[in-house]
Length: 257
Image (tube, rainbow, N blue to C red; front, side, top):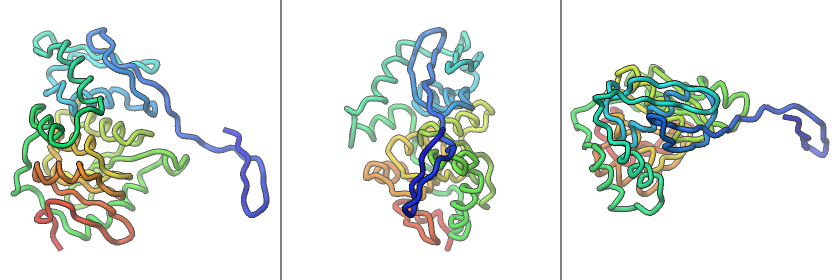
């Protein structure tokens, strides 16, 4: 996009790269389920991850086919999936509304299958955690060019980057990442660390729980409800992971050093 840049009392015209945001229509068995704004790309992963983390899908075998084209994804359920389409509509309304909060939100997580994380799960060193922001940033190709996009990175406990996804929406980036794992049959991600480029909200905790992730780290702050979710479900939640420091809000036992 053409822009006019002002700096130090001088100005000049230049071309600037802007992160793309477009609507995506989600159809299940031909029925319009939702429209979401996202950065185009990895749309099948986004839809699969969204439906899984909202508790609408539970297994890869429930999906017969999934195709993306022209800002639209068509997902066809397997005949023996047992998924109730009327339940899809009700579930989406509840999870996308802002009328459920606090204690009701925590109970809602249990109702869609979120479980307390086993305390004998993976451990990660403080040294590895401190290395994650730079590794994620190095993998953010779209952010490097536009400066206006979020990222989610999946790491093992040794700090090796396994997968990364970017999107203008923080939730979409996580859905794309989880959706890839769902379609590949790799869930639950019980020996991995999720690293986020922004802050941590209730919805991102929900998606992490549904994916079986025990450790979530972010460069930004968590919300109060995100911390409550981490404490309730035994997750390790790390915030302000940048500049050689971090805060642990829950699950300190999984961190060595």
